[in-house]
Image 1 (cartoon, rainbow, N blue to C red):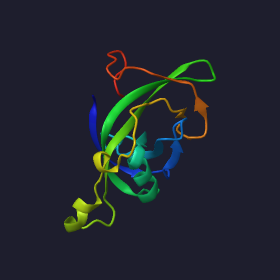
Image 2: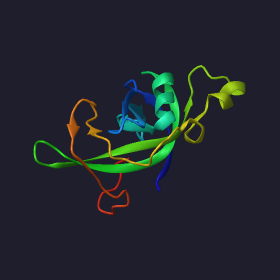
Image 3: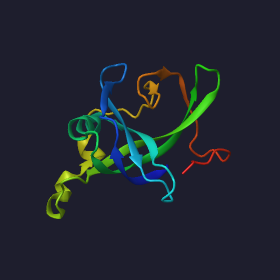
Image 4: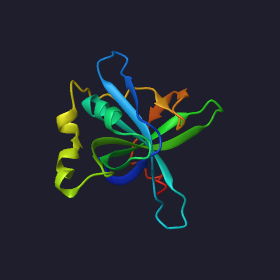
Length: 154
């Protein structure tokens, strides 16, 4: 498992969807974080939350919010309409910590955890993968996140 903690800014409001059986909520949003060096442009990453955590994302995250995200980083391979494959990183979160307007004394109450937010969550990643614009569905094949020939670009 590739565990990851990241501080980022929400650049698109979370979209709430459901698995094909309409039993589990799935939320996704785009976040932006600083590059490794000051001259590097910001990086954009798709963030996904499942179950009750997805509902919490939808209710409490909006564009412009700053968050600390904790989760599992994975690489997904997409077959593009143009006939080539594309790989993208995705963070499946287990917790998020809102940073804006949080005092130190109340910060522990603002943590949203996968453990406390999950409802009847199923560990199934068979949802439609979307382009970063989140309006174009492609058929996705999830590749192993341990591929040695394709390092994460950041």
